[in-house]
Length: 59
Image 1 (tube, rainbow, N blue to C red):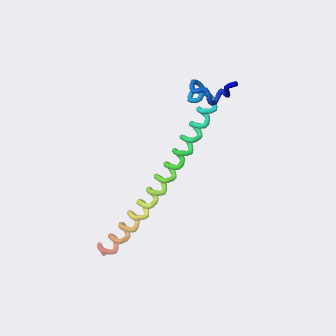
Image 2 (cartoon, one colour):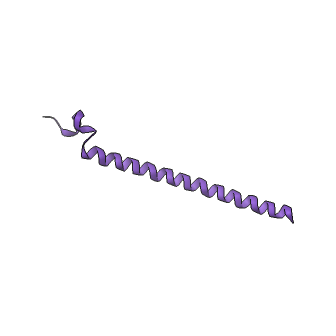
Image 3 (cartoon, rainbow, N blue to C red):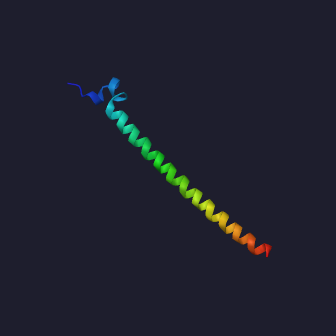
């Protein structure tokens, strides 16, 4: 008896594989978005610090 998920023909084309792959890709995208957001926040903080430092120099 052969289990369907171990059949090479259905392993990559089956519903279980697609659902698992979609979940993994969704998790990866969320992780990338969170990292990008964190990096953007750091850049915004540094720009605010730079703007504040420049305002003291110009006075």
